[in-house]
Length: 408
Image 1: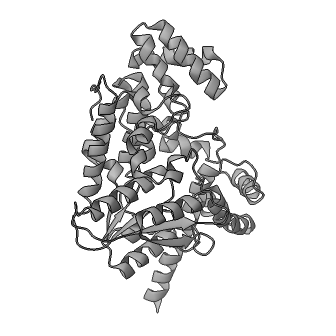
Image 2 (image 1 turned 45 degrees about the vertical axis):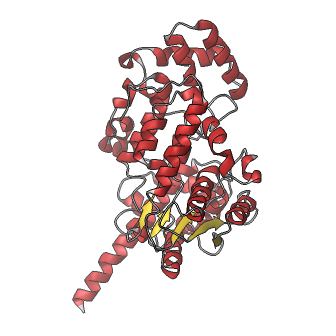
Image 3 (image 1 turned 90 degrees about the vertical axis):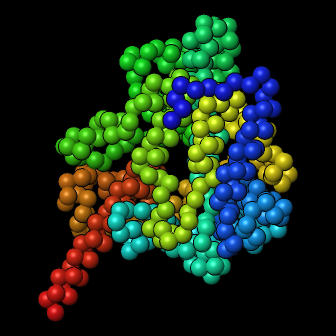
């Protein structure tokens, strides 16, 4: 990865031109097929950009593909629905909608076979839509948040000014981030000073607590300490490459997230879609290499996440999308899907994750109860525990079925 490279243009319009060119290339190389193409469309800026550019290139006969349809997950009162409608109308394409009320995110018997995976019922529906349309390629907007600098807190940028001894500029930047984040300016400056130190003196966990989310995430856990120790979970960072610590402080968060994404294989096709070309324009290598060398403050500034993207892509989007500043969250469909499962697990006499020594029974039952009532429970981790429990149960049922078949 280009950890030591930085592209600096005197005219910022050159960044926009290069980004538009590389993104067109990223989409075009995935449309060299005569079969229909299916594109995931959430109504956000990333997936909408893919759909808008793809249809524009098809209309201009710049690619072999000639037909594109979109597929969207929708639910009642979602903020995304009107934007999905706007993009579909703007591009003049057919839009297929899959309701999370009718097709849940998880089902007790559909959680993956090789490993626990959510979204199995919905992804099986995508595969069915692709089969009915004759599509062999599915485009996504995945990795767009990272590549385009969709950070609420990117205050490590202040470290760049400190390293070049531009203290006046560092104070101005820290003040801007302080006002946005509602944190004392000395906290912003102190974190930037720590980040500006040599990598051997900078604590890694500085970069694990800051992500693109707009709300702090609970750290409550139900994992048994002996299991966490045995599995090395107290030092989870040791599982991943740490070269990202040797990049510029303001870019470490980008490279760390990209490293995690690649090493955990987040972009590989999920089981129901492995027979399709499930592909991600925002993960196009030339595009990634370019964006990873663009100065961080060109991509994102206080109150301006996706700064470069908005200036470069606005002509691609319908007017309503250009004015969009928020994104619908997936919490409602998740909770609608998880609560019936959580209620069943609370009543269960035995939990596989407890019997295997992974989690503490009292803790996980308490959190499951709070999930049922919509209370804080570190839902992010609890989802993984629930998925693992269902997966272990399904595996046990498969073994029992095989034993009965042999006995018969």
